[in-house]
Image 1 (cartoon, rainbow, N blue to C red):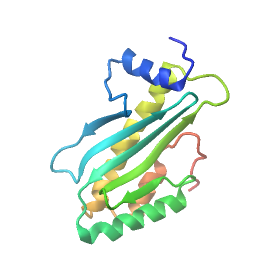
Image 2: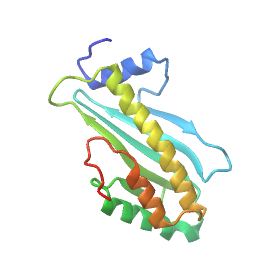
Image 3: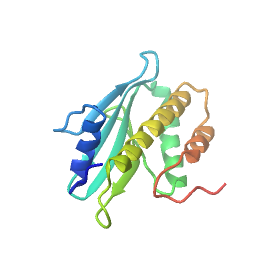
Image 4: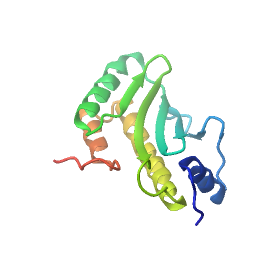
Length: 164
């Protein structure tokens, strides 16, 4: 396992070691979903500098005008109940944006490839789960309350567990 001086080097090392490709100039890679799903694509933004790693995700969605209120209600309720509210609806761009994890290493040892891998794979798993919940919310098979309850059961790193 290689040692890195910056988190940006650790992220690049993880991608190189696993033969993953991404657009390093803007730190984005894209994963598509079935064309008949309400979610068109999912973007993962990996933001790095010398001492920090933040991973933000955005879901490109198709929401009928009559479902906009439901989606806004979900975002508001989820943000109130999560220890660190993380959902934002960008109506102009038709994107549901949410923070999955933020790994800060300003103090302590620099993360190695295994820690970077854990963070990225965690994000991919939660992105997939959230896309499913959001799709079910949009098509009406899941209520706002049930969607929020499902999201609250997901594990978010560095946050206290949600008490039931």
